Image 1 (cartoon, rainbow, N blue to C red):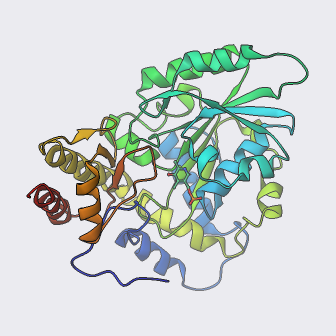
Image 2 (image 1 turned 90 degrees about the vertical axis):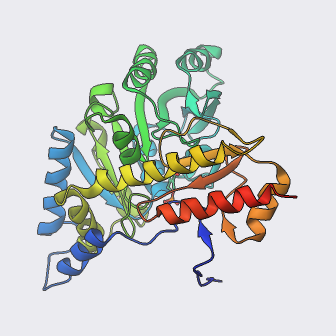
Length: 349
Ligand SMILES: *Cc1c(COP(=O)(O)O)cnc(C)c1O
């Protein structure tokens, strides 16, 4: 059931509860004019791929799919055979939130869970899991998957990425990046998209569009083009090849050509910092993980958490073992301040 939002409800459940940003919708409407060839052979899709090659400063291979689960599952499947394994964080979306899709689409590739610090993979874990077993009975590690920004709202610095990448290379593994919030990470670090991806050793990036402010859609960006061989067939078989591809591609054009994709992400990050600053002033409230992107993870007293939920504040408590408040391009300062006020009120006897 869809609940109508009211002015009083405060939306922090996820960055995918916001609508699409105006420049994405304008581009979508513009793309609606006339006839275009189907299945990605249209002019708009070509233009977006070219823009992404400019953004990443390299001749990468780009595909568009409907959601992040498909992007992750299909890209991992293209890097692995059924008897391989993928090393990922124990809190990784591919492990906890994709209903086994990576395993399903790779015909059995196993995910190996690595422990983390603030949601980030520790390089030493890669070596440990690779060397734990090398016999015929153990699924052979083939890929390291990491999430940027992480599931706990932290970001890997270029140095941290380099360390993970080095450990992966040393073990002969590919590097996959779940970039559902890649824009937030780029905005937070002020690095070039290239420095946070292929220059840091990433072979394939699942670049998030939905949470960035598109109506839907994610891009799969292969920096090592040999790995994308036959990827188009994989997408088609999985039901991820849009026939009217221009509608999946056009919103990207809106945010890339206007250059607003990073400005929107920076806004979301700023709202999260504002909220974190407000919340940690309250007695007994601590950050569960550093606030580095667009999510705020706080340890809230249960009574306060319950009271906020009763006040129609929307947030999750089942991700990362803390209260999670996500900000998006559409989050306003007023909404942040209202939430902070409600939280402060919840402490009153
Ligand atoms: C939201 C999200 C995805 C994509 O999820 P879908 O619902 O399949 O679009 C992937 N990875 C992370 C870390 C996410 O937060």
